[in-house]
Amino acid sequence: MQYLLMLYAEEGGWARMSKADQERGVAAYGAYTEALKAAGVWVGSNRLQGTNTATTVRLVDGKSQVLDGPYVDSKEQLGGYYLIEAPDLDAALGWAARCPGSSHGTIEVRPVWSYAG
Amino acid sequence: MTGKTQACLAADAVARRSYGKLVAYLAADMHDVSAAEDALSEAFAAALSDWPVNGCPDNPEAWLMTVARRKGIDGVRRRRSGDAAAQQLRAMLDQHATWADAADDAAIPDRRLALLFACAHPAIDTNIRAPLMLQTVLGLDAKTIASAFLASPDAMSKRLGRAKQKIREAGIPFVIPDLDELTERLDGVLDAVYTTFAQGWSDPNDADLLRRDLADEALFLARLLAELLPQEPEALGLLAGMLYAEARRRARRDAQGDYVPLAEQDISLWDASMIDDAEALLRRASTFGRIGRYQLEAALQSAHVERRRSGRTDWTPEVQLYDALLTLTGSPVVALNRALAIAEVDGPRAALHIVEALSIDKRLAEYQPYWAARAALFARVGNLGEAHHAYEIAVGLTGDPALRRFLQSQQAALLNGGGAMHA
Image (cartoon, rainbow over all chains, first blue to last red; front, side, top):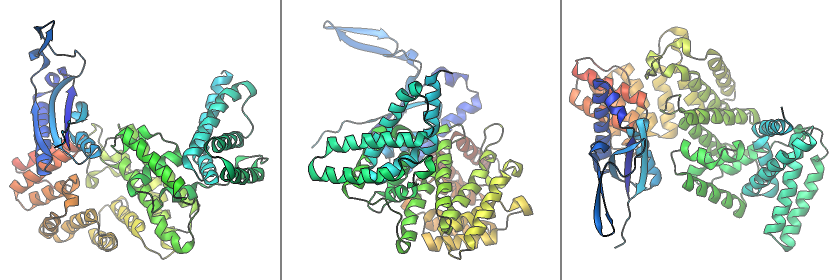
């Protein structure tokens, strides 16, 4: 079963880190990705640009409405994701707890909708 | 202080002191853990409205038991009808008479051990035994237990519910097994307590209160087992092993919150009196002349803290203890730790030989200490490429920020020509 791990964190935190800590942070994510791959769990992952680059689109009264900024303006923002293949939710939660993001933010774990057949 | 606050404090104190004892008695009585928990929580609710008005009773446990049993009897009436209900009610009322007039709670028989044996019954799924004990004997809620075991709160709550249903419907008895069965059945109980402790002891920093508490709860259960089964050397061995480990808790991190490997821990931070208690327990266990897994684990822990006295670690007896433990358990984790002890006696190449052979064991593939050990051994023989890769996986597998930083610095040290000497 596939699970999406959505990594939420306070965006300003990254800019406040020292260069050495940033490098160590990037390396930690790299190692986490390697571990997921070695375990045959990794399906895909990406880091997103900051919410200052976000744009939202929706149709209002038949017309596209485009707005600058993120959909939800909250303290912690979606900053990246991992898509993993895990046998069950507990296994997915185990991987989420190992993600560096769980110590500097919050990880939301959601099963991917599967279509029968 | 208002009557209400006082009543709350009194109820809280009883809950802490006697929850497990009350649930155990009620559950054995009603042959139903859920019904016992429900009846007791109704009784606590009744106490919170009654005590502020009428004052705290002299013997709050007996008061709660009386109310809980009445609630329990109402529950049986609601759920069942006819002969079955009448029979069960008669049995409950008969027993009721035997202790209701008692002046203190010592008169309420301690059936927690029987409850623990019911929770760890072979018919109960291994994975749910420890959570079940924590809920029934300690009164932890499903949400807390789920977080501690990294499971979904909803799923944990359902699994606990199913286990209790099984106890009721399969008629799992609330009894301490006979001597011929005791040793085997006790393994299940000890294993669940050990799992709980390991869960609380494992990686996270002390800041993780939930897990810290879990280690404390496990220690409470282990103390209870050692007290109720003083003739069982394995129960004593389990408590001893846990005390040795707990004694080193504060030394596992330095002032900056960084990870400190066992070999570099500041001995003055170890809890000396806890270690003394552990030594005494282990000595008492050995007088029974029945060695077992938990006594061996405790003996290893004892060897780990030997440098407290001698200033050095003697690895030869450690290897021998691991040999015995491996024969007994066949556990790949034991095989891994044995290899690390062998590295200190016969050198890293001999250990690497074993570690490489273990790589086919799937159970170790996602086990962080395996990769950290592998990395350190490869570093010691100068195979920096393999060491680097193994550190990479180890870093990726740990959820503990302090340990992650430590492993990353070990990995970085490879490039600077420094050998990574710890694991």
